Length: 156
Length: 156
DNA sequence: TGCTATTCAATCGCGCACGATCTATATTCC
DNA sequence: GGAATATAGATCGTGCGCGATTGAATAGCA
Image (cartoon, rainbow over all chains, first blue to last red; front, side):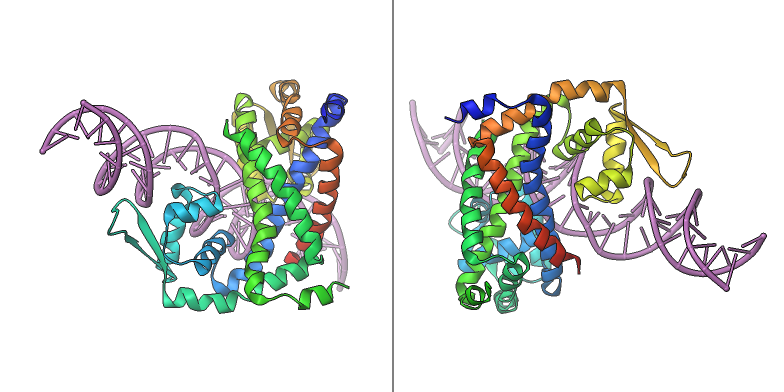
């Protein structure tokens, strides 16, 4: 299907072309991170911490694995992050009674309260992008489909 | 222009919408990183190291700042990374005679030789994406334009 | 010329990501 | 019930990113 297109690539320019798309994603990610750093500083959150909080705002009392499944992160990343949120009194962690292997992560009152403060963040980001919701949605869909393919290739 | 669209956003769904686009970029970046980790393992490089090598393959003998300008990275990130490349004997670092503040980064013979080995990487990534060059180019262009806006907002 | 301001790289501290390993609990199957 | 297996989290080591600071070299200017 795209074999014709692929096979026509000049190896010399490929080292540039390749850099362009992947590097774009890489740069976009770093730029977003910087923007979020600025926007989230008042809340005392990093972007990954904000992601975890969003997951919990949507549904409280999840296990570490359940959070990880939504964010594609494993316990090696989440455990320390959750401990930091716990130190900030935004969440509490407790072993599940039914299955002592699991740790249930729950929002504290302060954690729930933070949701209100976070309300302005999405609008700020949207505004910073100078894009319409439709544009971003379209871009997201395409990006997601590429990510799915990439993730599959990375897996095996 | 998109003010109308922006002002119509329901704050409750915004916390989801927002996550969708930015989270897509974030996830794409992590997924690409994992793919590159696999592809670059034989070369002994990480993705950021590979980026630096690509910059040098294109033009050798740059200063740390010049490399940083192309990759949007500063010396706090690059200095340790370059030291690791130096340890691997892929680059050498030397203070510039003309301006002792600058450090010139040069490819070693092994560093230059690595370019050949890296030749297959871009094709592998393109293949993994299951996209045509045209699709990726289009996606890149849109992403870059958003990134430029985001970076500007993050700056001030 | 001398003094200040700027620039460049290095360093420090912190927080991700993640491959690999470890421990404790739960499940399975005999 | 008990041994083998599987699962959930925690831990360890390494490598980014980056805000903030430092130290050295240069540029600029009175």
